[in-house]
Image (tube, rainbow, N blue to C red; front, side, top):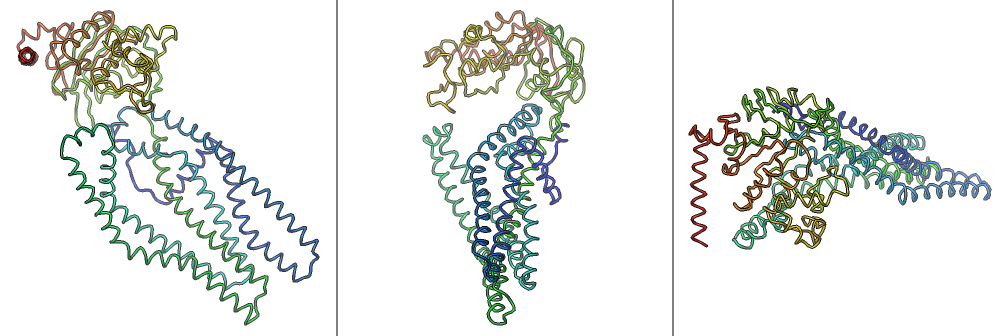
Length: 616
């Protein structure tokens, strides 16, 4: 469909975009928790300051003071000041780790996920039906708070790491110009060999991915309850075990393929990053100080201590750069999701539609989903207080029609008119409040039966029990619910409660239908409300719907034509348009598609009833 195709596509990002994404993360974290950004900056600054101070200044001051013969008091005053500053920095670090960071983590988690949940609540339904958008949405949501903080930390690490590297180079150059050349060794180790290792790891992980996916799938299937019966009643376990062994063998083969090259690269990385600079600079400094006597002990101490600090500063800086680019891709998902401009936002404002539905008309409506036309030049009308049935084979467009009615989508062409006005002119939430729905593809939430029926509707507290009880009685679920350990307070599903109720498909469906009963609104939609019910329960349910909703506009979607023959008007859909329309009697007299479908179903019902009687 057009709105899906216009969403940003998944793509590789360049370094410039990665940097901008991390700056976006910095701004986002600043809006959520500015004091955490300040503390992260101070903490990183103090860390590099401490390294440079002790390696470049403290050691040189102490050795020069001893060589000059400074008084013990003067040296101790200096040491005391340093110890005091170090103690204060250590205290700040403990407070940061023990108090500030945990509190800030909670603030960031709350603030960021409020933004993400608000955005996910506001984007149109088509976003969740588009796999590319949904993949990026899940990647944006996964540990978003942790990754946002890591991104900001990496940004500060790069900024202050770059400054500290320049300062370290300057101090070493001041002590000995040639010693600076040794610092190039960890640069080669990190920027050359470490990058080669990263590329090798990427290739290895890419080759392992199919095998790891197979292993993860089998691990997951083995503990999911919906697979338990088939695993125990069939020989599929032996097939899964064979696939698991093949996947493990595949992982081992990939590992062997890269082992030698990976070992060589890791050896070169360690040698250039640590060994060559430490031993090389130590030999060079010792020669200058002991043999040629062109280097003082103070200069040697500065060079050796700066060697260690500079190496770790450079390692930290290069790792931070790598993290910066890695985080840039994650932030791309987060940024793309937060910046996405909704085509049908849930907070769409407009006119108040009121509470009365006189007419609701589809006028020459066409709709395409992913470039495939689903609804084609369809026209139909619903009048207030009447009962309508939408019938037709699977794929005829019935459910899509309801989604257009509820404005989950907008038509590609044509209009949907409420009381003569385009529904796009109305406030979306107030417009949808006119409808109560019971969808076939229902979902239960890990909440009480009462909450699963009311679904957050604004029902006065003193009316909740009575309204829910009435809705459950009408749907046929009341007796079953009251047999549960805590009645209407029983938690459904066992997601969080081991004592939660696991009901049958038909019982869950009755609770979904109760959601439509409990809502006070002029228009009610029942999408296959009896698909999981037996014929007796189905007949009772439809009698209750017709009786309790006589003042409502009713729309049924059903494959069982016997259940909708009492509707005031029937629309038969095929290939996304209305093929036949009329009362049940009119359509039977036409002897067209509807009459043919009804006759065939009647024969099947009769056959089933006969077989059932024989069995009885």
